[in-house]
Image (cartoon, rainbow, N blue to C red; front, side, top):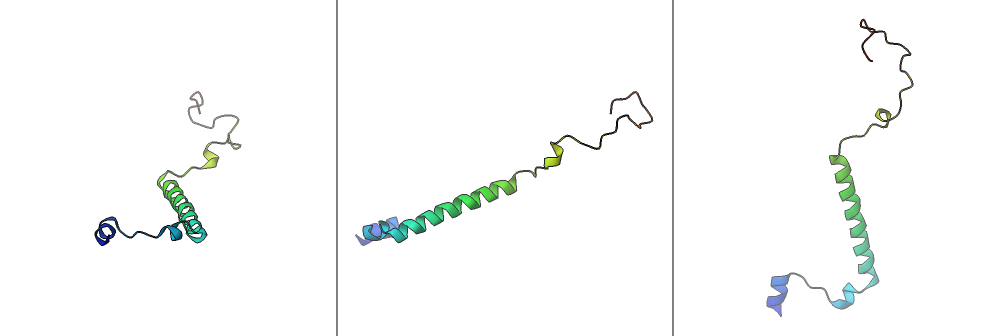
Length: 72
């Protein structure tokens, strides 16, 4: 039996694994993992500026370019 424990790692007794405290700890670890993965993914993605996707309110009615026939 000791050879099995060494090769597989630490084995907890079934009474400990099925206890309420172990279930709470497992749920906390699962939620914590999801939060950290989502934070890492959000940090890796490019920053989104909301103002870039909204219509501009400060556009001029007519162009003030030295080439007035060119599109703005």
